[in-house]
Structure formats: C-alpha cells, structure tokens
Image (cartoon, rainbow, N blue to C red):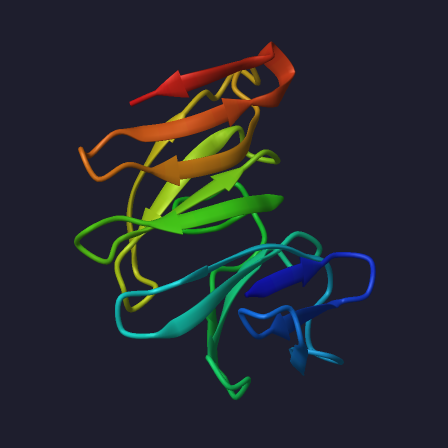
Length: 146
C-alpha cells in the first residue's frame, strides 16, 4: 500500500497487513498528492509543488521525472491526481491548468482536454475497465465521465 504524504514530502509504503515497510522520495518530493502503479511495476507520483510526475521503482529507487511547470502542451500546473489506462497511458488531472493531460508510458505528451476558460477544475481521476475516464471537478462539485 502506497500513501502519498503531501505535508511530509514522501510516500510511505505499508505491507498488506498494515506493517510499515519503507519511505520513497524523502528529500526529493515537494508535495506528493497521488500515486499509481504502472503495468510494468513502476510507481508514478504526482507532485503538486514541483509540477511534475516522478517515477520510482516499487522499492523506492528514483527512475526519472517528466513535465515542467507551465500552461503549454506537455507542461503541468498543479498536478493533483493521476492514473493509467489499459494501454499504459498516464492521465494527469491538473487543476492549475484546468485540464487532463495524457502522456505515453515514457512520459511523452500525447493529448490534453479540459477548459481554457477556468470552468473545469479536475482534482481526482480514475480509469474504469470499460474505458471511461472519471474526473472529479472540484470547482463545479460534480464528477464528469469521458
């Protein structure tokens, strides 16, 4: 079990019985808000303050990071949640830019959707086995399905 500890700037890892195992990212992470495990067993971390996505091995070794801060395609602002789909694409809910950005498994930008007028405030994201993308839209107090 991976727990993003935003205020402690780390990911805590627990065994399935609840016993603490180890810490990931201490000293590297700004404010980790969400984590997900990829199909190739890597841990992705959405870092709110560093405006990027970090990749670690499951035992905590740093692999890479992708994205920089900004409003451009492939840049992030306030990445608060992330998930992966069945094909390994990484979907990032970024409330700073009011959109969902999609990256391939190597962290290369593919596409984004959302609102340029500030009327979409994605805070959480989930992908269903049927192919739906569920986005919690905090500013509008709703869940949108794509």
